[in-house]
Image: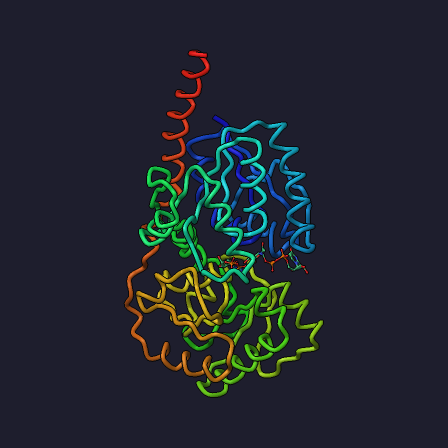
Amino acid sequence: MKIAIILGTRPEIIKMSPIIREFERSYNDYFILHTGQHYSYEMDKVFFEQLELPEPKYNLKVGSGSHGEQTGKMLIGIERVLKQENPDLVLVVGDTNTVLAGALTAAKLGIKIGHVEAGLRSYDKQMPEEINRVLTDHCSDYLFAPTEKSKQILVSEGIPENKIFVTGNTIVDAVYQNIELAHRKANILDRLNLERNSYFLATVHRQENVDDKIRFRNILEGLQKVSKIFGYPVFLVIHPRAKKQMNIFGLKPSGLNLIEPLDYLNFLNLEANARLVLTDSGGVQEEACILRVPCVTLRYNTERPETLEVGANILAGTNPDEIVKKTEYMLSRKREWINPFGDGKAGIRIVHILKNELIESLKYKRGVDLWI
Ligand code: UD1
Ligand code: UDP
């Protein structure tokens, strides 16, 4: 029973890490295929090193490009590897082009698919991620929904209930497995000369935000305004897409502290100690909720409605005055919500389910073969 883990970007490495750790501990018939969607050291290798993950057996080195070019190259490369390795299952997490390419290639080859973080919906088809997650869910055999809500979404779309498993989100596992280490080992607060709760942390990288000059400029203006009005310095950790777009648009935000992407322990530490987080990232919305740091989301929708419901997060969109208003509201909130994303054992649960379910389905396959 061989499993192929396919990943390619920063959040996939982080969210897959608890599953990889569990495979390393209890099951070794698996391998990692990296598409190379992310390739800069600080977006990729740093996480393998810091989280002590085994090196991928394959790296397709697909790199950056238009959606079609990037996804097409992945399909070709993944097919070659899957034909050679002939795994029983492909496992993917999230909603990137890597995830869609992994799932689609497996589906075409008749290989079973497990989708971790299934059932998330923003209902915004302008987002490339929404297309990726819907298509991946609908060709998957094992759908690991983080919450009961995501399960109900899948059921409402006609996916049979027996394919869906509510496991919690592996990001909780990743936070719990690393937060103590982050507090002990990270030196980012010293490096930036910061006290706990004395600054805002911001990240922005969504295509619909940073590839649109007006939206991007508005977000930066919103961040400048909240810094001035509430008296907290803003540290904007700058994703490579945002950096590239900032240069293309000639945006030079004054009054903000721009920092390069951080390793996981330093980022977690900076996030956990922030007074408030402003972000358009999916993973950062979840982590802020888990770490009880109020979050203002720089988007008009979220596929993480659980964070809104528990009162950990609010949608501000990209208008500067709305960002100020929503920041003021979140600063007034008590940090006592309950984490809706599980108990930190999602990785163990997923590996356990895969082992049991796959063994059953293989028994059945062999029975049928014998019968024929
Ligand atoms: C991708 C995912 C997005 C996810 C994000 C996580 C898709 C459609 N998008 O967006 O869902 O939230 O990853 O961070 O799959 N670049 C580098 N170094 C790298 C990678 C990218 O410099 O290692 C730069 C390149 O200029 C590239 C740009 O970032 O053109 C965008 O990279 P890409 O992988 O296309 O999309 P992301 O914005 O990273
Ligand atoms: N992250 C990190 N260093 C950074 C910024 C983010 O380690 O400088 C981590 C963060 O803790 C979270 C994940 O990257 O686990 C989120 O990734 P990203 O925002 O790129 O993608 P998304 O979650 O929106 O798909």
